[in-house]
Length: 398
Image (cartoon, rainbow, N blue to C red; front, top):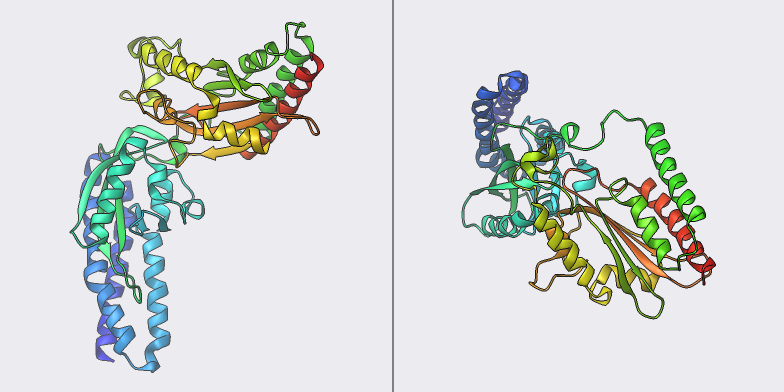
């Protein structure tokens, strides 16, 4: 019982130190690394000292203190959530088991959404393989690791990820505790994510979406009889840049053929474009030739080599993906590079062009890239409605 009391006193001291760390969040930016180092030290203390003692007391202690042990375990879980340092608990496959409040704010991803999904899905494509490899090494007992990664929504801000092994009570395998820190003292957050102003109301977003639907309907009704293939081309022009960064159109019934590819190919040099680096990041802004090459490669791609398009044409249902986990879902170019990686795609919509009872007349694929907000369910629903209107316009010209 004396050991339990001692453990309780040490845990109480830890709680007080955490409270002091929380109050230190308002220190100047140049002093923040010192606070982060102290927080990491406290996390190490929990992993190396408090947690093993708690496990020992839970397994060896008398049944009379089982209720107290459960309370202590609940307290440790609460402390994990309240620690003022972004922390995630993942398995050896980087699947998120827990994400504390600070990590949710840091990454801009809700904890409920992240749980059960690989943490690598929120990182830039180039960093995913290295992070998986380091996490696997830590989980199998090869020692702590640290590496620099980039969040997919803010690729310009490097993030330092520190990984350490942790053996949860009653589990045969080690988990990995991931501590995230801004590598350049800039803390990214969901509130600072580039894109439309974060204070827009749902009513305003709905109005903007209805304006897009109105523009699409006007275009379809006023389009001259230029042939069926001209309908999706005009629709793509309405959606390009206003609704999506990239627009790809495949038409045909028995066999699809690529008819339209619109991308940000006319972007000037980064130095001549104020604010572009704030959206994509200085190191992520492609030069015009790079975008032109991607557009040309997409135009030359056979839709049959694109799994996402083939599935949409076969199943006739809309596909919405945010931070696509599989980079090969839209195929690869002739050099073997995934198109989603080359176009820096962060969300996509793939919509079949079909009426309620008619055949699929084509597939419309939309990409958003860089720091632009991901496609929402409301936008996907509106796009599904517009796709039926496009299909009706195509059928009218048969």
